[in-house]
Every structure is written in structure tokens, then in C-alpha cells.
Length: 54
Image (tube, rainbow, N blue to C red; front, side, top):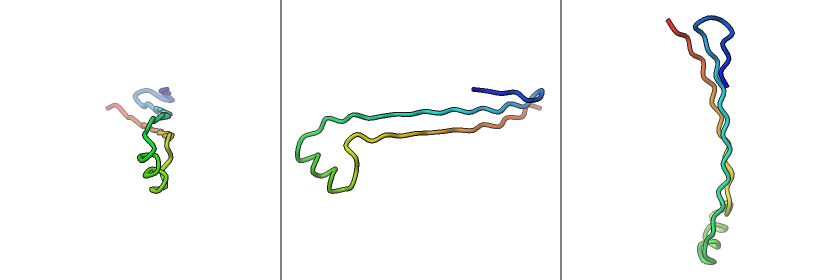
């Protein structure tokens, strides 16, 4: 999404969500659990862009 409040100035916002579903073997699942990690991690990413054109 980009918003232009005044001429030659843009404000942009970008959001991204990702969910990873892993299918792993029992030994690998035990190693993931021992490391304190989630088997199916989620990730959220956000970006804010301010752009001025001259």
C-alpha cells in the first residue's frame, strides 16, 4: 500500500506473514524440541518506506 500525502512524497507499508509446516523424522523432531525451536514456525515481517522524489 502506498500513500502520497503531497506531491513527490510517498509513504509505503508492506506486511508479510509466513507459516512453515515441516514434516520431520522422530530424531529430528527430538533435536528441534531440545533446541527450544517450534516444529512449524511462524514469521511476520513489516516494512515502512518513506520516499521523497527530487
